[in-house]
Image (cartoon, rainbow, N blue to C red):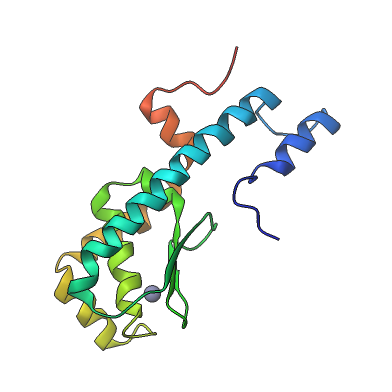
Length: 159
Ligand SMILES: [Zn+2]
């Protein structure tokens, strides 16, 4: 079962049980990482709810709930029941990039595919979506908690 608040159990275990493991973090550092992650997940939950509510009148459709995940390969998804899921790591991107993913998923409420009609709706709401999508493709792998903290000058290693 997926536990969103305990995403680092494997490296923590490896670190204590296997001295040869490659985990760069001590237990204290992992704990610190988890604290930061909770904070950014809370922010993600707020932000995605606000931005989805903002764009919904433009895209149309109706969603039932919003969930925040940490998927390796997906930025968002939309279920046939109207549940929108978003990758929390998008809080580390510029807001306009996060907005693109919000609009993308909202448009799936109307078109559950990537048809011409779907992209037409995305473009109607967000005429420059191609640039935003390209940014995400190019920089998506940089959107990790560790890299974000480093860019912000927040030290993670406890010397
Ligand atoms: Zn899609």
